[in-house]
Image (spheres, helix red, strand yellow):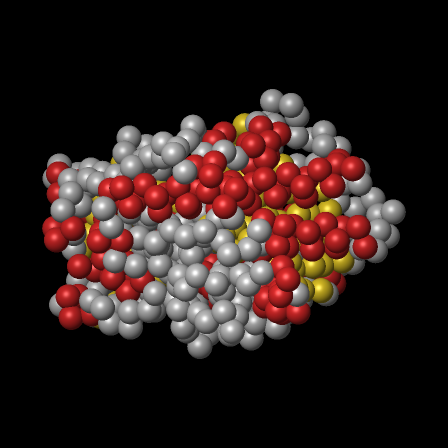
Length: 481
């Protein structure tokens, strides 16, 4: 048996920061995520610096911000993952048995990028096609970005969520026990389609869930600057739904998260039975969030809290007495991000990154213990940018050039735009300078002659390349959820 520590990385897809009961949401059922929070460390200010699927996952793999790699959209030709320097590649080279299970969203989708073994979503669909008696997944026509709720067309035991956990358990049971393991268990939910299995829908069918929020800048749809509406226009037109329909959407979203949570109970139970909890670090996060109707917006990409703020939980091994009882169940308010996943895992495993490897991330366990923390966090994706420092966050979209400023500590759902309110000139000026410096440093095309120049007339871009994520059940892919 190996005496080196194991690492279990768990990710969900499109899960907002405020969807864990132990983090203050009384309306959602997440007993096993609660357990992680109660026995580990919850990071209250964790962000996806590029809240888009592929760049966010590349950040986890490389420890670098999307804007550092030039990888800030799902459609870019940039493919910055080097198998020798990826998180699994570095751990594999140091003697870890490495396995990817579930949604990876790599390009090419079968490239291992350092993993010894990999099973992706396409393997689930191939398996189901060989067993028609188990049902046909996604046989309802809902697209991969549509917000309309639905019900899964397979039973829970045959669902993609359950398959992801079942195959993760199979890896733990059949692995080489003489080596430590790194397992990335990656769920595709609660990314649309919002189609929980019926038993989870029943849990929320008549349940109260929070209503979307609006603010002094977003009370009416037409008053919102067109640039902020662009992702929603391209993907789901969320403002067309009635308040009653939004309630259904949010219930289905919550049900998908609870389905993941309950299945995690199977994984954690098997780990306990195999005596793995005492020597395994568990890290839970998501690639990005979902606006879910807040400010009449849906989907992701933008730097607003619903889109960019993600859950981040780390449960140190039971045997690691460096983390005393007072630190277990604690909350760290320092700024962390997805780029911190790689250095945290490497530091925990005792693996030194190559000297020539440029990393943007920090070891979160060191940060939580009072060590090095970041002062500024910059996010850039598509045409959207945000800057976070202390209690404030500044956002800018360079489709039309509109900006927003919030005091996140007093206004966690960004309802009171301080640019509109006035009286915060010094803070606003500081953030504007920092954003310009950031965009200059990454050679962003919006910077010309020392100024940020918007594309102009964002209304002309509305509806461009609209695609709600249609996928035929006959042609499953890595993005089929």
